[in-house]
Image (cartoon, rainbow, N blue to C red; front, side, top):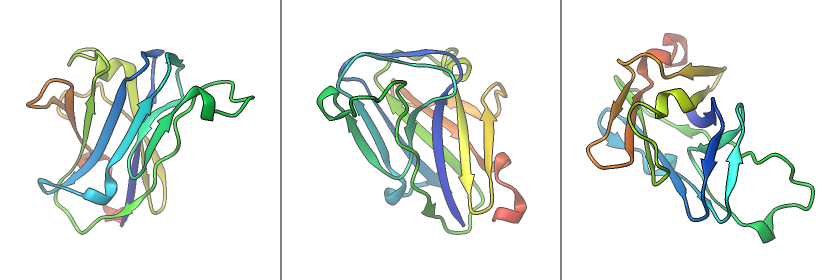
Length: 152
């Protein structure tokens, strides 16, 4: 099965120059190296609701001089799906230096889970899906309930 994940703003998210968001899929407790994503912002920007902040499977550095002249609303690049082995549990690990806390993050972002056959919006208001990581700025989200049996 192919899988990718995008982090989207549910409310406006303010990003400062130098902030970054790193993502990786964890399958049965092991990080999938090819799923690592990195979004580094070289300028201050506000990501408005419905637009991407970060995604898995690729790295991107956003710099003012490299943005198109008519770029308008900021939207991070889409995810690159990766092949994942059969699994019992899939999690998304988000690591960021943007000042999110455990209570804020579920209110500020939603996820788009992209599989072979569909895309699903995932809200994080369910406490059983979302937990704080062991390190500051690290969050783990259980994607397993959102992946259809048909997609496995």
